Length: 118
Image 1 (cartoon, helix red, strand yellow):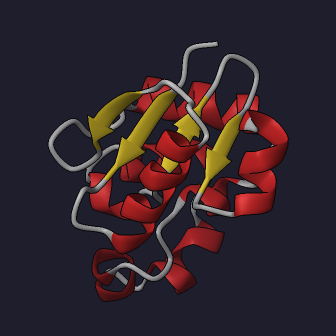
Image 2 (image 1 turned 180 degrees about the vertical axis):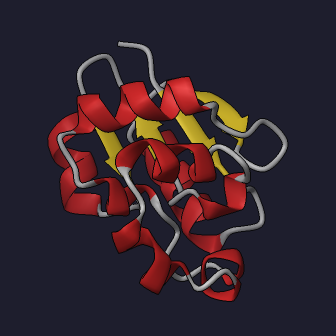
């Protein structure tokens, strides 16, 4: 199984998630989400694979999300516009993001990770 782990290294949740992966001997390829932002094509593929609402891909507690007033703007945007917006800045994307062959995990919820990766 190949795993892509998108992280922002200074983020404490990402650090905790990375520790979890290491402790559970899950091999992964790490990618810095700010330096190597996901493309609209990648985000579209991951969103479709995840089965999650698109809102789950937004870092709703992030400074950029708040400063742009996205809580009020997202409901008026269509899917394509939201994905294009996500692709503009890795700091808008919920992290960590784990992409597997048949699943996508947003954020770090140990129970979900154990189910998919444990």
